[in-house]
Image 1 (spheres, rainbow, N blue to C red):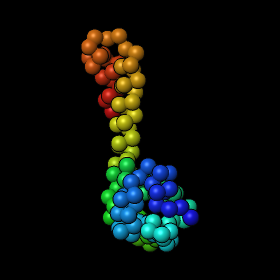
Image 2 (image 1 turned 180 degrees about the horizontal axis):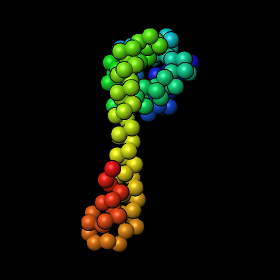
Image 3 (image 1 turned 120 degrees about the vertical axis):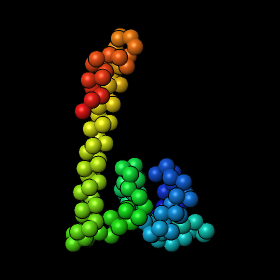
Image 4 (image 1 turned 30 degrees about the vertical axis):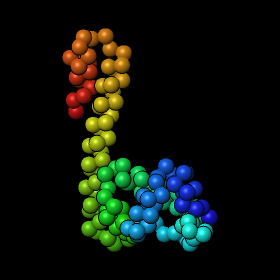
Length: 124
């Protein structure tokens, strides 16, 4: 069993975030150790999924629905497919930015943003 402070330390989340996730139904504590909530060790992988989804732009409500989804939930599957398309666009945009910045870090063109190679890497 992990108490809330241990979970917070291992995940980098504030205890208040863990309590919020629990209130929203994303987590379930397994009990208490004195005044502190305790969690099964599996909560760490669930929090990794939640954090990944949050960074990808999912709302708490979307994550909540995703965590209880079944294969027959066609509406949620359609939303997931839409999100996949958006993520592909985001990934492509971020890769272009990464490539441009990587080039700019060694480029000698003045000014850097006028470099044809830099500009070419930014465009889709």
